[in-house]
Length: 281
Image (cartoon, rainbow, N blue to C red; front, side, top):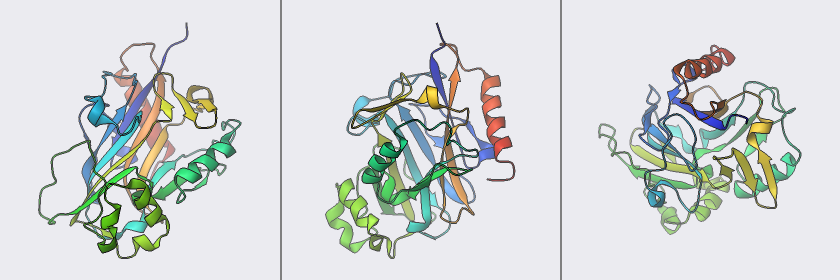
């Protein structure tokens, strides 16, 4: 019997500071000189080190999602919101591992997030969107620069009315907010910085973590384990020009057959991430 696939989740403010995330449990600090805050990762059907179920099915996930990355914090320097991106990057080509149906899958993702840009066939593939228009739920509130961050909460209400006079009608309507920002005019004058507290939930229900498979509408079904090429799936929050990275969350498949992921395996994955991006944080 083949070992059951498992996930190792790491996060940090740079690729050289990645450390294991307590999935479905405590938030993980990703603070640096550029960003003050934390992330939490919640996976339904998670199999991994010290695997536990989400603390509360009614609060851990929105609308039947199986996957959630909650980000809460503030940027330490002012930056135009349109210049803050969120998405995936790889250090090596993945084109030979992409399954049949990838083009159809990308068309579907483009309908869900029209701000997404990508090149999965590049030597260093990427798929990125402006953070504020790609996350599923978003809250932006004013906070004094010297005021402590609110306690971490996985529940993110949809409300950006504090930052835009014409955004009041968007409260409670993520789809309207995404459409408003996709026009790009919605970003005009929106600046993130020390006086803006950001809370976001990037989530969906397309991944079955008990089998590590991707299921999309229209009958598209991929085994992530079968197409995995050994590279971690890396989420990054960075500037549009790529000169600054705020934090990372990575997912690595490990096969431990129900055993606890050993510290040596954690070190191996972290060292691999550091070697692949030597000198790039």
